[in-house]
Image 1 (cartoon, one colour):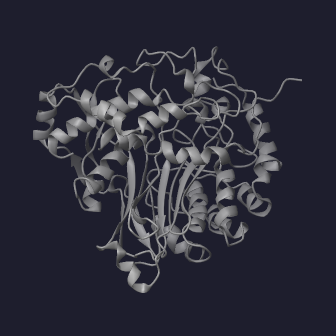
Image 2 (tube, helix red, strand yellow):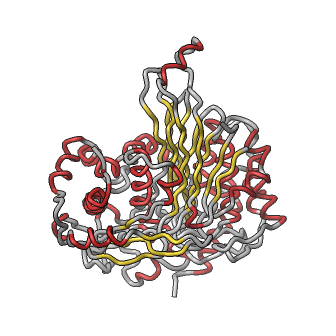
Length: 509
């Protein structure tokens, strides 16, 4: 009997991957640079309604982790085009007592998948039921709840179930309502087993089988240097792959070293840019797409930065009729041996499909801390974005705008951005009008400066959406010792910024 293409199993390998993932998060920064009770910010304008409707879940129990779980489930209902329990996620948790923990709940390839499964129909990699990876979001949320949760598991589902049952105002970026099939109630009552070993998973497998195959520095000179650094980064990233299948330990250690940063620095020339071949890109680029991101900081300054995705708007474009779950399109983030990409480079072997393997991702949830004389480091920022491969340059620019250039948090997020994918060797710069009517565009002098360096420019409408929380610490941080507690965490002023490019809003409670 032929094995089913899709088998839903718990994402067990994620536990051993989580420790490695903390290190990988820092790579993109190495290439680029040598008082409210609680606060939630997320994309797509939903933060106010979630906080108003979910007040008791945000305030009850332990700190920032439980509202993160409840918020993730709510976002999966109200912004199902880019998030949901049929997809995957990355979560970074900061605690003043236990420091940082990363949860990797990225989707994995089905058991019967193979690197040649799309050789006769490359469209099936991007469209339809065969583009689905095994969902990981619920497994990741449950693992976080097991480690940190104090409220009952089913309690965290109540606001999302209420939204799914009672309905909600559709935002401009959604425009589609999906009928609930009771999947949230079943997950609330029976836990992840309902998806991975129970009736929800069985129904999804049946639905997928029924579809069959289908018919992701300062001033203008600083901006030039940033563009060049991003090109080097994109050239290197396709050598990476799932560390359970590809030995990347030495490679990642080298990329995170000061010596490697100096090598990249020496290759950047202030007077000019170069053809794509100069950056020694060997493989075609991953082109992943839509996501959702939110940041949570609580009264104790514990924090969560979490990005979720189903890849592309509405994932595979397939709805499981029996469960109401939108199927992800994460198999499209793998490389395929026979695929001819627009950049005409060969596909990256490190990202080829294998059963239980996760594809590369551009998701970049970050938590920034400041080293202090107090035994525990101090939280200074929480940041992340949505927008596929545009996330990396967008998060990098907001980070540098605030922590290097000294911009206020709002200005750091609002400032016009550039994007580069290495191939095509074109700088995309923002030139568009947001939902609220604000126009975002680089100054003409900046465009002239970059063209003089040899950059090919094109205007871009849209890009990544960034969420940013900053804690302003008073100096010296060691003032906390006046209270006789060496581990005292100083509570500075919190400033939350949601990207106006998509009419986002922060919320406090």
